[in-house]
Image (cartoon, rainbow, N blue to C red):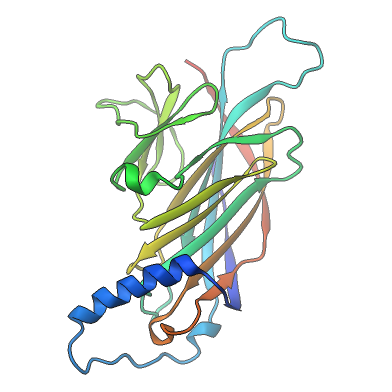
Length: 269
C-alpha cells in the first residue's frame, strides 16, 4: 500500500551550498556559449517568495526469510524492510528551470528501537556506476543491495511498488527479488545512513523542470512483529535562480512530517 501527501516548502532564505555553486557555475558557462547576443532575461518579481509544493509517497515491503526454529528466547527477530520514498517537487507556471537545482531529503523511523539501516539506493557512487535509465537493483535476505543488477528478460512482477516501479522475482542467488524501472538523471548524489533506521540524500539535477519524481530507497532491519512503520520525513529544494546567479543559493524547506505506513509482506522464495 502506498501512502502519500503534499507538503509546502516555504522560502527559508539564502544558504551555503558549495556543491550547487560549483555545478551551477559550470552549467552557466556552457549556457553562455549558446546564448544569443543581447538576449537578457527579465527578472521575475517576487519569485523567491513563492512556496514550492512537493508530493511525497512511501511504500514499505518486508523481506521475510524462512522462519528459523530454536532461536534464543526473548530475542527480537529483525527482518529486512525496504522503504521506498518518491519525492516530486511541483513546477510553478512562469518559473523557468534553474541551471542546477538540488533536492534534500531525509527519512527516518520514529521510535525505531533496535531498527537500523543496512543499505541505501541510490548511493553516492550511483552516477558513476551505470546509466540513469530503467535501473534495477536486487535485495538479498540480509537486506543488502546489489547494484548494478541486470533486469530479467521475462520477469514476473510480484508487486507494483510505486508508479512505474515493480518488484520482480530474481534469478540471482544473492538477491531474493529485484526492484525494476527506476529512472533519474542526477548529475551528483551525496547519500548516507542516519542512526535509528534513517537515510538522507542530496540530489543535484541540471536544466530540467522541478516536476520530476525522485525514487529513493533504504533497507532497515526492523522488528518482525511490527506491521506498521512511522516515518519522519523532511524535504527541501535549493537553487540559484536565473536572475540571482551571482548570489548565494535560495532554499525552500518543508516542515517535517510523520506518516504511518503498512508493510507489504512477500514470502521469501
